[in-house]
Each structure stands twice: as C-alpha cells, then as structure tokens.
Length: 325
Image (cartoon, rainbow, N blue to C red; front, top):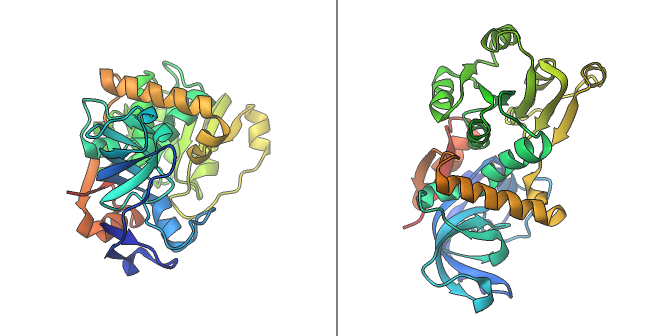
C-alpha cells in the first residue's frame, strides 16, 4: 500500500510516499480502507519528534481517520465489511489502509461525507470535553474562542452554538473572522489589534466573559484571562503562536476564576466513560443536525505536504483533510 513514511524525525518537507506492507490486525482491531484523514498541528510536531510523546520509528503519521471497513478480526467488533466508519488512531492514518482499535471507531453519521467525518474525532471531542464537561457552558453565556478559524476553534463555535451561548470568535485576519462568522459565531474580533479588550466589551455590551476557549497562547492569553467574570473558566487548548504564556496567579484569585487544561488525547485512557458518552453525544447531535458539520479544506494524498504547509503557516480555515481515492 502507499503511505507517508517517517523513517526519522524530520520536517514534513523531507517525507515521501512509499510502498509499505499493509498492517496486520491485532485482537480488537479492524482494518480500514482509508478515504480521508484529518491532520493538525500535533501531526507536524510528531513527525519532527517535537511532541510531548514520541512515536516509535518508523511510523506513518495521522490520527483522525474515515473510511470503509475492509476486515474485522471477529464478529465481536460490531462492524461488517463495507461499513462507513470514522474515529481516531495513535498513528498510521496517512495510508491506503489502517488498523484501528474497534472501541475507538464509530459509524459515520448519515449527514457527513468522509472528509467531514475525518474532521470530527479530535477537534469535536476536544471542544465537547472542554466546553461541556469542564466548563459546563450554558445557554446565554459569553464564550470567547481564540483561534476561531482553525479546526479546533470551529468545533468550539459549533458546540457553543449548539448550547445557544453567545459565541465571540477571535481571529487574526478579516478573512478568518468572516469564516468564523459563517461557521456560526455571533460576533468576531481581531485579538491582534491594539485595545482589543475594549472591542470585546463593546460586542458583549459590557458583559464579562464566562468561558474562554484558547488555542492561541502567547501574549494573547493573559489579556484574555482579564476579560473573565466571576468564576469564569479559561480553557487551555493549544499554543498556535508557538509561545507558552505565563499568568499572574493573583488574577485567578481576584476573579475566582479557573485555568483548566484540555487534553483530549488522554480522555479515553483516564476517563473512558466520559470519552464514550461525549462521542455518543457528538454523533447523535451530528445525526439530528443540531450540531453543525465541520467545514474542511481537502488535499489529495499526493499533495500531503501542501496540506501540512496550510497548517504550519496558519493559513488553514477549518479542518485540513487529506483524501485517499
């Protein structure tokens, strides 16, 4: 099969498509014929060996997958050959075939294409875990989404809209702000502008922020934390700026506010019941239309480097997906 091969930790530009052996199934796994793969900033970090955990060499990158069941190891998996499915894997997705643990695979909601389904597993789980499980986002609350035009940011907009919160999208360009508004945000602001807190207060009619979904980091985060009201929650999702911020802890004391880390990669292992419940909720809401489908930018497998470049240069709007025909 064709696959993106990582023989040593390096930049994406040095990777190649290679002919490699199809994966062998272990107990509890199914083999997927891959149709679409969602990729994100974490995938680029893993390729370079710069992520907090390292994949053993050699490996095939890609964690979010959608495709068709080719083979199941037993009837106990609950899947049959030909089922349209999606889910997450540790790695191995950027290939024509991929072995996946059946416990982390679900049937694709009928409203979604393969490309849309590949955009769901990590981003929607991250947004749902942060906003619903950790922040208990409720109707009418003010939600500030920083990095709102990225894949995770758009997922947060969709979850916020589902909860009927007032969603304010923070994005760094006019094009990205328009994209976030089209994705379902109620207002949009430029968090790179001088005095953006004043603009935020204007669009909220002077009300403080209840929940911040922060995928940006850097100098933006401490300023954003200051916009929280009493018992507000600041969700730490990622650091798109490449800079990890520092926060004066007296701000948390004065506001009775919480700084909460959101790491969806650990949920299945540490909180399996929460993982299962949130995934079931996401699928149900996608199926009935109350949770909007993700917008995607698609690249064929032969252009996988262009797909990564879209993310690394922060040009991406919505989720970047690699398709495999």
